[in-house]
Image 1 (cartoon, rainbow, N blue to C red):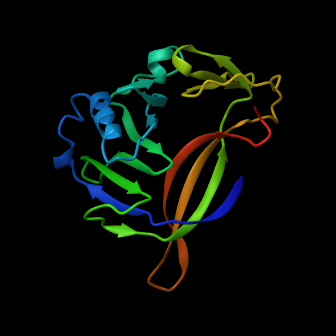
Image 2: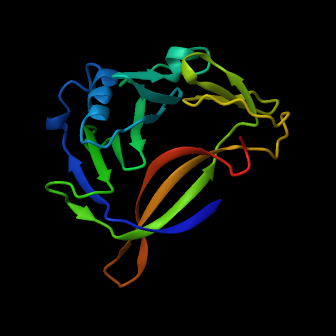
Amino acid sequence: MMRKKIDTTATCKIYTAVEMNGFADDAIKWLSSQMRAYDLKLTYLLAHASDGVIWGRFDDEELITSHDVAPQHSPPLRVETLLTARVFAPVGELLVWRDEDGEWATRLIAEKQLADATTGWNSGFEEQQVLLGTRTDPLKRGFTLMSEGAQGLFHAVPLELSLSGGGDERWHPLRLVVHHYWQEDEHGFTRVHTSRLVDLALKEGNA
């Protein structure tokens, strides 16, 4: 995994369930409204549910999910099965999860100043994590099915890719860009305090 140090002015704010009216009734609609908010141009969705992984992309006022384009490979986004959901872009991420009381909560991190921010960071590092997939098959609406191995591992990503790799199991072109933020603890040790998703990218050398 490639890593590089970053300097940042990232700030964070935690939102409570009170500010999540409508999420439990229509998670897609609520997430779409959040992707238009905050002036962060949030683009991608990555959600983990008890029945699978859901990718998404916000296009022209609409959140398109991997279930919309490949229902045979991706479950629907439902609050009944949802564990976490992240909508993200290079300048910020909104994370949705259940707190210790079973209530929905959100965390917003932006690499700019947020009003009423609860914490902030000025340094960290960027990491590119390797994603599953050695073969690409086009799907509708700008998605691509990434598959790997005889076990039939797959996920439908919100990028339009047409790459050569011939199914070589050593060839993984897709990367998930992550920012990790450092913070000093009460003992004076600097550790990774928080991480967020940033972008989807291709390994250098792929086109």
